[in-house]
Amino acid sequence: MSAAITPGGRRWRRFRRNPTAVIGLAIVLVVLFAAAFAPWISPYPSHVGAVVNFRARHQPPSLHYLFGTDNVGRDIFSRVLFGYRISLLLAGAVLGVAVPVGVALGLIAGYFGGWVETIIMRVNDISLAIPPLVMALAVTTVLTPSLLHSMLAIAALWWTWHTRLIYSITRTLRHQEFIEAAETLGASKLHILFRELLPNCASAILVKVSLDFGFVILVGAALSYLGLGVQPPTPDLGTMVAAGADFLPERWWEALLPGAAILFVALGFNLLGDGLRDLFDVESVR
Image 1 (cartoon, rainbow, N blue to C red):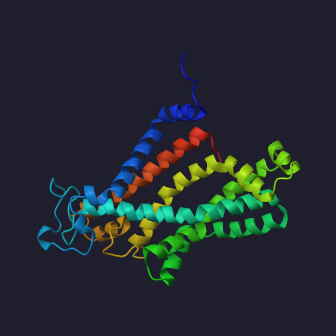
Image 2 (cartoon, rainbow, N blue to C red):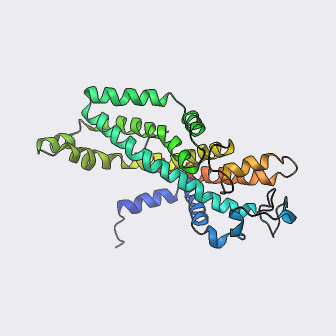
Image 3 (cartoon, rainbow, N blue to C red):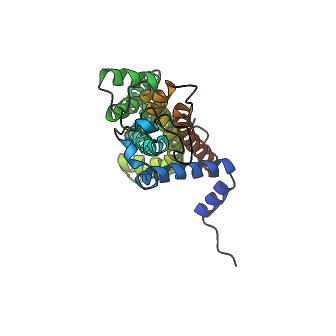
């Protein structure tokens, strides 16, 4: 007799049958590998810093320089690999702050209702009316442009999406029989929130986080492109696109290839998120 297939095994089999999800996972794994091992796989790791080599400036893509060189002779491919580190760090830090805050507020508003729900959701509605990029531009304009300030600026409003998502799920769950049973048995409010309700929101949170990774990277790249994010000589994809744009169209590789690197990572996370959404049958995640 064949061994019984576990629920996790069934989900993995369904996931493998979704080609877009598999492609997205492969892209994400490639980016994570490139970021983690950038010092060892980049051909010119020293080009990450303030290095100049005017004899090699504006070299087109070749076997010697896979993505060509920039206006001061630095290898663009090496800087893209290290740029992935910055992008993933930015997205991870933003979501590491925004997701717990948004999830906690959504659980509280959805479960308790009443004036607690009114206050949290009205603040959430006001915050949702402000585009995250506009808020990030305002914050980074006031503060000194840096990676830390970019993280704070993006995280300032990103929690709102998670609050609304978890609030809508919690409202549909709070009158379910398993919640009423827990209340009848005298379970504490914290137990109900984080041991009963939160596990039932886990799949939606996972899908939302995977989709958000790509969006946060795009917002961070936009800030750097405008000069309000990561500052040179730190390798950042948005900064590289901005620097290369000055030499378009003749030296197209200096802007196009870092821009393609942004598209690559954003596409990977979006394909993975769509695959997870289909896998868990989550309908309410954008």
